[in-house]
Image (tube, rainbow, N blue to C red):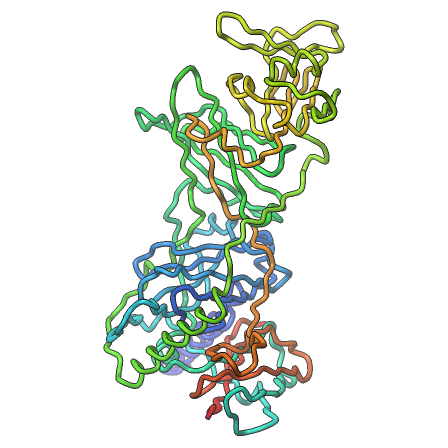
Length: 549
């Protein structure tokens, strides 16, 4: 064989290998799809994600995040995936400045893979209070940009009509033919020229900027990571850390931090926003600091940026989008309201301390002015001692028919309390119930010499305010499932309709998939786009552009 032929065959083999690698890359990576190319600050960005079967070994909780051009975390969500599909949203902060931002996702258990990879999207944000936008950043290194192949021959978009006016209904079907696509997303939006030309899929090589989070597989729950340190010296501390969750009075967990002061908790099936109470067990008057470690992976470290001026047509389109958002907020309010809902089932099937021996409801008895009188009149087997201005509690050891020498575990609204002064002034009219455990109980390797459980009618826990070594933190857990509503609000034609997004759905890849939506008052070019990924990992797209007059 001649030397030239050998070189030719080598080049062909290398090219084939690189092409095969490029085709199958996304089959081992999360792929993010956004419902739009740009947002106005205060908007809600809706996101769908393709989860390859190979990645489902990492759990079923996907960490979704919005990151700035400088690598700062803007917002994040933990969403639950259903086989190969995950859906979520990000509420773009109303104060977010104009610029280029990035959406990508990862599994926490991928952290042991070194540099993580994800196919995400770039999105422009225009601050709704900015009067004039004349220049914007763009991604400079084109190697990070994924050029999706046009799939007009594989995917067809059929419309029932060709001409459309404002508030007309658009009907059609999408057909993938005999092609084997693993995942398809259809979207429809009014084109904003600048973002339409300068956004798309990007290869992200994500890096962990917060050391200390283990590569734990999150399955039906979220991992909470934190660091405990001495308030005076700043040195790491390894005192026992207790975790309570307000709204769940039967739950408690604990952790002994390592030499670096790191501690971890796993909240199983926790949905919504959790109010956590974290308490290090202080020795004497020693003070501690608790810091939660954000679960964040930076994906823009390898990107380079340039700044480009926008032309008059692009500037006019952005200005019209800003005005449309103003009218939309004026007549319809915000897209997503804040939601403090929280749900978390009891993982133990019973209170962590077991079933109580006595359950007392003070409202069934005469009103009593303080806890000393309550203990004397209502709490059999509980001893309230008041000597030398010091209050101590003792619980009867029911099995031994004598009182424990040590104080019981004391709980108010499920939160451990180590100062009896919190109980002294409680009136019976303020208490919903009191439970007593009159025996030694074991929880893991913790032992309790009886348990006193006081449940207040007021669940706000205002009594915790400004208390040392008690840290109250709101932590987002698994996001409640929500669906975007792109339909008009139904006010008729009396109010302006400034919607620019009309569709964002996962497409059924078998047969004809029908779709329909009603247009708004916004005129311009509208793109109906289908983005798809094959079973071998290739990204395809096709689109149809119609003019709305």
